[in-house]
Image (cartoon, rainbow, N blue to C red; front, side, top):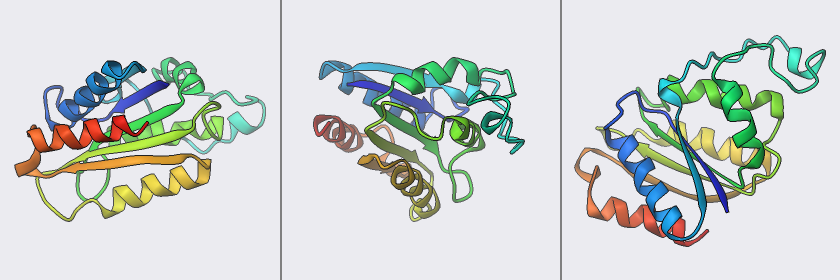
Length: 171
């Protein structure tokens, strides 16, 4: 399968980046084609709700920023993995902008499945992000390929790596 991972943590060597990298390694080992994009270090603005994409733009966004690199990857992805830290009960702003900018596509064309990787220093802070994820997944009509969360004592741990490998094995 063609897998696209959007990694949304500004900490390049942080816990979320580790989870995304572990998913990439597991998926490549299983024979999947994987592209991992560090969206936190891209220049991607949020959606302006201008509706250009659904009018004159005929599906293209009026904003010309680093999101242009993601559109072809999204169009070919069969699996989309969102990897994000939890910042005050929701996914980071760095991943929210690309999520919102997918609006012009309505749904990535070949997408069949989604997965979610979340890290936080606190337990019991994942509900908002998981709710958003499930909302997107149901709206697009794609299969939930699983969720892995890792609080402070679970980060960069063998048990968390094993959960990530289990997600990949079910693809």
